[in-house]
Image 1: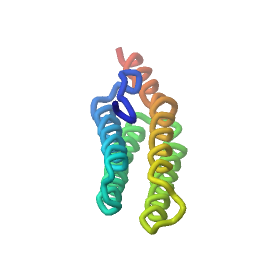
Image 2: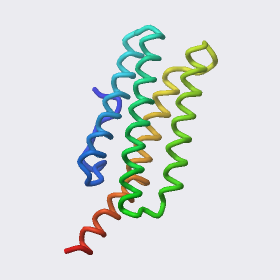
Image 3: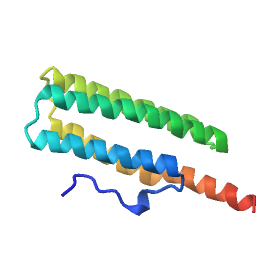
Length: 137
């Protein structure tokens, strides 16, 4: 069973963004499998770094889309993205150095943040796109 399961309700209606969200789900599931399968700390940190790198790429694409459609919440959204990257990076560094952070804590944060972000904030992007599309009919 997957740690985080993609569902159609997470789609915002933009093929690229939706496929990137699915890829983030896959990376989180890969991380969970590594953690539960006893992968070494170096392998797990490499997966976390890959996830952060991919998130940065996705966030840039998403922010470009928001700018293109004139999304009013762009600045707030951009701050949420930056906050996510900083939090995951800090947790990964602490965990990698043997601090009091469990891999499960990182996984839970990733899962909760992504689900909340996609279902609330990113859905607003989809709503603006649909409104603009209807206005041009």
